[in-house]
Length: 287
Image 1 (tube, rainbow, N blue to C red):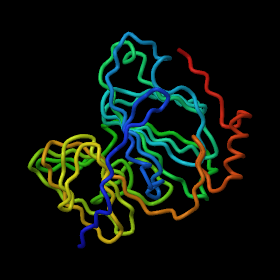
Image 2 (image 1 turned 90 degrees about the vertical axis):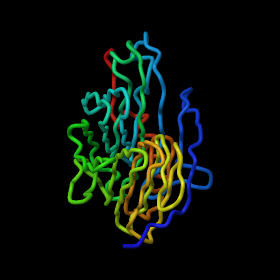
Image 3 (image 1 turned 120 degrees about the vertical axis):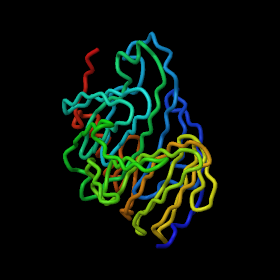
């Protein structure tokens, strides 16, 4: 089995999203996407408490043409949408949403967390949808930590959110072939990860320090690996939490504008008109 070649190590940049400072490893300078992955945002903050839920998180907004996926690491997030879904996912859980032809949703810390305060940490990443599925019906799936299968060995664990890894199938449905993992490894331990050579693969470190195929990576680095092998060797220099995003490239044109990801500008203009006309649903939050 050949090693996957490391193409680059991308340090996350600080970005201001409506007054919220996030770490963004993707897109990065000169890198619009790593097909099929479009964006990665890492939110890590301390809520002060004493707040109303309406004043925290992200209020109702539409999406079309891709899947925004959220891995929750600390605290909780409540999802509401125009399909009538209302679910709160806590540490270790995942919010999985396929926007399809259109959906309006909000993501906020729960009312209890807004009041009590505490650490809130999550990663949201956007997965492109193939053209054939961009106008499918939208759907939402909340996954708890307990509903996410894990592989554990001495010094490390891997949770399989989507795809099949070492014979274990993740519960999240995907529209193109991919494997999505959440991992943790203790200092001085090692593990081997094997993924198809045809997949574009990334490893993002939430914290800690790893040696990946003999290349050093530190907290908030994104390691991009190529399509020339299957094997990934991971050695922990420090206790580290990480995610693995690996998928078959879709190899289609991508045109995006804000919360819409389509294949051409005409489709983007239609998405904007449809959102303005309420065709992506209406969400009125009840506080």
